[in-house]
Length: 221
Image 1: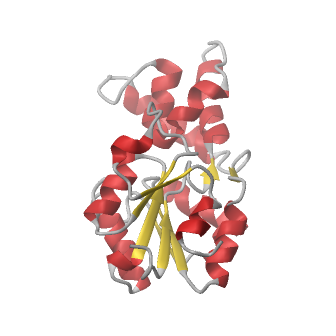
Image 2: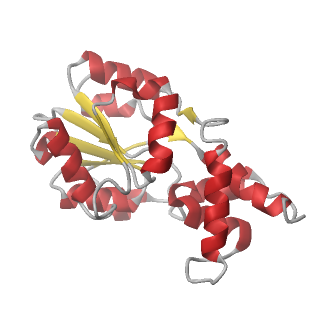
């Protein structure tokens, strides 16, 4: 399955970078601005992959169906935009993984549901992404993951057949999208995972518990 791989595509938050501290801080500022008690990062971290929806759910217990959600979402976006990479870092081993991928001659890129409003300045600010050959945001195509459209667009931009790309992500929707696009899939079990403690139900082709394990799958170890 991995013998004809020419490119590695990654989800962003929870797969390549740990953005939970900045996402959580953006949401928590909304609480402290209202004289509410600050919440620990440990509460925000599992839901960081869900973006505004996850952060507002933790901070205020609200969902997109609540009347106050839209105003809170815009406030969260403003807070987050002001601190995109203040405390955001690549996970341990990711920089080395990307270097090995590049040295091997494989292409690589990012497919995230984060909107371009945040994806582009964030990836431009972090040297890690200088070698990425495609960056697909949540609003690059008419559909976001779990729809396969963003992954198919990444393959198109790389001029590759989808089955020559492997997709790595830390959310079930990543695996659903990858499978729908015809790509081998890898569950990043070190990521945020939401409320899931076991990724087996996602039916990914492979699972890794640290970034460097991908090198074994790609036969680069």
